[in-house]
Length: 187
Ligand code: GAR
Image 1: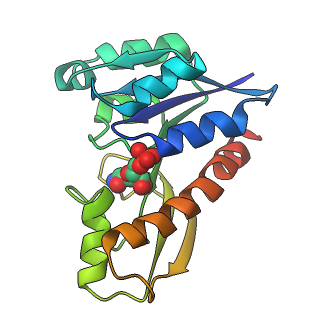
Image 2: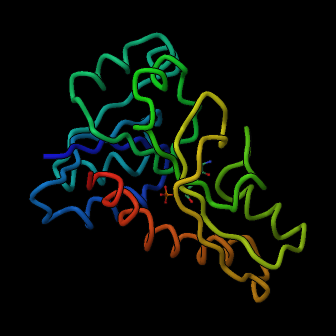
């Protein structure tokens, strides 16, 4: 059995989608949802689907406690699905090429610290970009700079608001993120 550990900070539509996708899979399971946000909707999702959840603060993330928790679960893949804090080096180094992130734009454009969620879509709209997309990439020591695993672009010339862009990007995320995870675990 291959084990996925999810990290998320917010609404958790990707978490929900990933759980649904692997629900009836006999060889891949979700072993936990870790969050920095006590009020994150992902906690309700975890409870609903009977998945183990864990809430941590910044100190616990950066000073080894979260790493201990991860090690106990022995995940094959750590998936950041809307996780907005930086993964500390101590965790990145223990899990080389085993932590992946999804970013709601075509990196290397519109990435880096402070670029997440709606802020990305707002900036893309202001810059009158004709297209945007998603990037799934390995996590290294620097924000949004790890090796790319998958990218998909989409035309946004008909979008008038960041919310409209978000809807298109989210659809791409939901279509491609679970499939990419499955492909990575199929070794
Ligand atoms: C997703 O669009 C994801 O790409 C983005 O946060 C959203 C979370 O949505 N991640 C980042 O911006 C990371 N820099 P969700 O909580 O509904 O899955």
